[in-house]
Length: 129
Image (cartoon, rainbow, N blue to C red; front, side, top):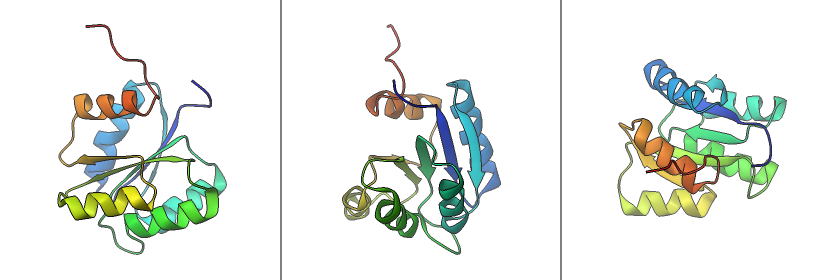
């Protein structure tokens, strides 16, 4: 696994950020937080994380707007971006993936769901059965 295990959790809900932080820290990630896409973009410019857990619906700059700006500025592969949202329509999921998200999970999420996605992204080893 290349690179430092850093994660930026982007959500306008403090409760969701705290829950996501706990999950990611249990997996050895160093976690920073942002309340909206604009803060997230500034945080990425300061220090690009390995992974961004990104809410879709936020004030100031939405997750999709952040995703588009991040891909334009940092390229197609870094950071890895996983949308975490209540948006469940297939069309919205396709929009996010086409805009450059690598993964997509539905809220509410739990450790098991996040862990599975981290394994798919190659950030964690698959646990022994």
